[in-house]
Length: 465
Image 1 (tube, rainbow, N blue to C red):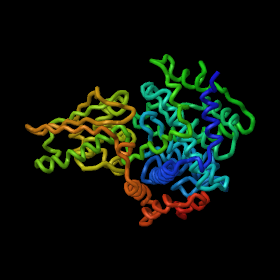
Image 2: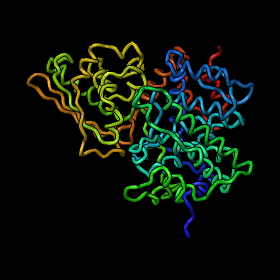
Image 3: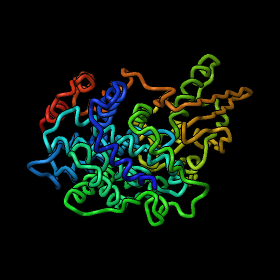
Image 4: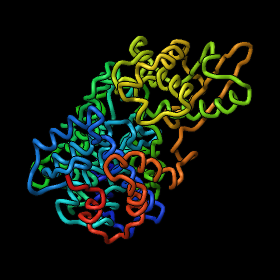
């Protein structure tokens, strides 16, 4: 009888060491660490509604010892800090994301690792090793179901995020494989997360990153204390995948998750996202920027546009276009982050999409609203989603038609962000807190040696309040 997926992932996580990580994996992990710190700080900005709310909670949950709540100037117990930091990292939709697995490890695995490592007085090499274990586990579990969770209205951050965090925290705290397997079983009981907030503009979805981080720490603590979990948490008839996905169309992929563990690394393929909105729309923003160059050469402005047609795949199409009235004219920032008409219209009118695009004053821009009314959407029959998030855009302006197809979303393995782009993103996200030193701090974080204590790393992004 072949070992369960739980035991295979537990053995991998328990036995992983920093020396086992190829140099590109170590480097990628450190850049993803920098990116996650930056997006969490952006989420903590009091100018953001979620930042104000979670900052209030950080003060309520404060503790004299534990881990730092990024951007809030408070300390909380590790599991609480992970919940807050994971939520902050997902608050503005800028956390990293792996393509075909739909996993978002940056807002789940990384906050859990940082919180526990800071509390335990550990070093950067231990953090990067734990991140690698967590990223690989979370991504590989995402392969089992593919896009089925999204089609059901679930969200992977809080469904499979807890498992990734278990792998990471198990590695970080030195748990043996049987205890990590128990923690996987316990995390299966905690798995949850629905997408309805993307249809209403409510902000509860941001908690999915935090819940995955929190659940992994708690599950690992429970397993270490002696609580056991089912070894068949993944494959069992009443296990995680069957209970969440039955009735199941076609076959679940049980082969890929354990294939090449320790030799085939998916962490470096995880996209660092350049824009603060749903990744499904990033290729559309890139395509609009290319079209604007053509418009300028042709003497065309957004006021000349008669119709815009956008094609993308299901179930993403429904996610960013329905309900149509709310998605065409979003009233809440989080609603706008999942609105294809609003994002495409904003890019066409303003030339780019950034943090200010999703703040309340921008939502009522009449030029953006008028253009959003001219946008129609349909399914893209040639899309390879979820491997990539391609975009097809057709713009009609007078007697001219402009068409653009962008096959790869920015940040993916085929269109990676340069290190300088990641630093620019970090600077944009943290200037409100770190001021003129923000870019320098980002560069220094990316260059920290392996033996740097986590306490020193955190001190670099803390500002006295």
